[in-house]
Length: 217
Image (cartoon, rainbow, N blue to C red; front, side):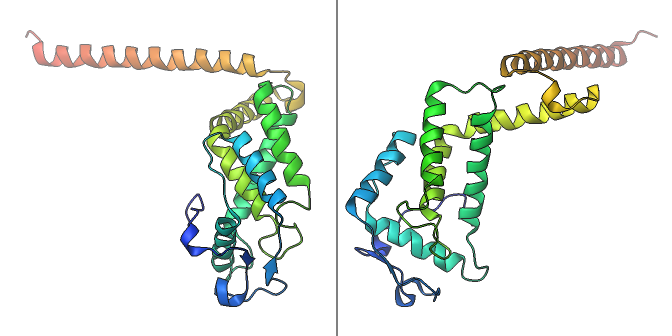
């Protein structure tokens, strides 16, 4: 399955009609989902606050995506797309709560607004809806990922560093007291050392090669 779900308006209809005739798969408990314009507007406003380049989506497009998720999840009973994006939401939650990481105020606000939506069981699609109940949450996480991916990758690297340090020092991670700034300094020092070692190895190799070529007997 691709990393993203593409929005294909021409495959959608004017309302969230998720019947078997439309989706190509019968899912118990799903025929139609009624949503209000205000709910679509709320979804789009949050999406654009997370990623200013995200265009507004219509109910038609959202219905099309929902049916594609139903078809993809037909064999397994759930959606890999939704599952993977909710894992990302958990990573965002942990990153935001970690005072050692010190997120910018802008990212704190964006992630906080996103998590408020994820925690609301009555969003665009009610959470209790079979298979696609968390689709709107997953879509918003996916939209936010374009902006937050580098931050999340950096945080994951930070956590790996802490775990390695905790093992090396024989102490729990919580007792390390290492901040994001301290990690970045240590990381830069490590990168400089690696660069110096590469330069030394390169000069030694060049010198050895020259000796082999120009050795005077």
